[in-house]
Image (tube, rainbow, N blue to C red; front, side, top):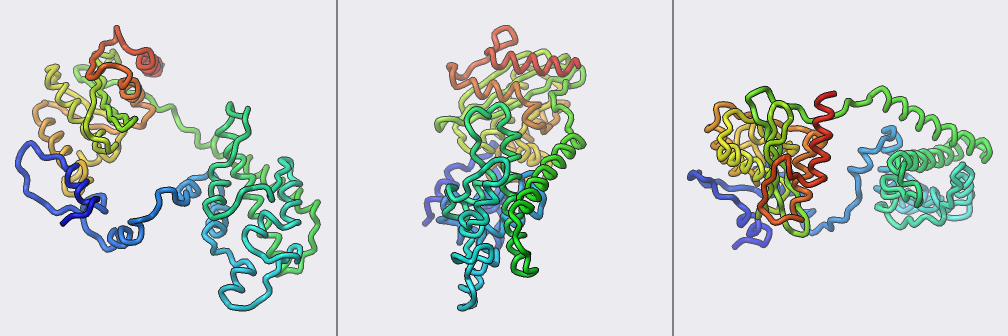
Length: 385
């Protein structure tokens, strides 16, 4: 009657503590609502391999949008090379306009053409483009989004990765621009001038990025203490080796760590595990007889679900959200708050180190695991600064 995916989804439904009316849920939609768009996506992506092209990684790169669009056109096969136009029209000149020796395919124009190879090698990095392993659109995206960083450069891996992405993207754009000038303006190629112009563009782009980063420098994100008389719980979940652990940390208005807890949870879905951690924090607060509490998590979807109508929340955690809201009513003051991971580092450290201990466990500030203690001291230092 049900397919495997539906059966797995049904078995993962958490039953509410109080009876609720049954409701049909469309598992291919975040809110559980049927939409034509989600049905089409389910139809065409049902058997899609998880190892797909990293388009999201491309759009998140620190590159000018013009370069991103060019890379997208190259990787998606929509760039109008002579070969692609001839295949669509059934006839036409297919020879590469830069060297007139082979057909102008994506691979040839940007990586194998003699002119392109000179341009790649002529820059300060001396890249042998013909040795790059480019066999599909996925490889082109990976070349830009996940460039290979030479061994020994790990101390500046992030900066070097960004510079490499810029170098590759600007080079591709420069080759395409040169190709268009040759076709449409009868441009005469001067390799020395072309390479100098390319290096100038690369340096300019990297410099503009550094200036932008300085102008938009973000303040340090740190844990904030609650008001006097209020206890703040930070929660997190960690999944490793097909096991899930949830953690909770209670601190007062001075930042003093009262207790830290961790235990296994049967929920292997990260979002569901985070929602279960929120429930556990509320149960711990009640057991400790705390009156005014704040429950803080870096799982935005879980916190957002607590602030919106239940029917608008993610269907996977709807019942857990309902339980949290019911438990919150037993406190004179109960606030749910979202923070970035950097401000939730202590709870994250507890969840991460917990699998190495006998669970469940509870500890105080006097017997914290070393990694958790370091994270807590960091928060205290930032709190006092």
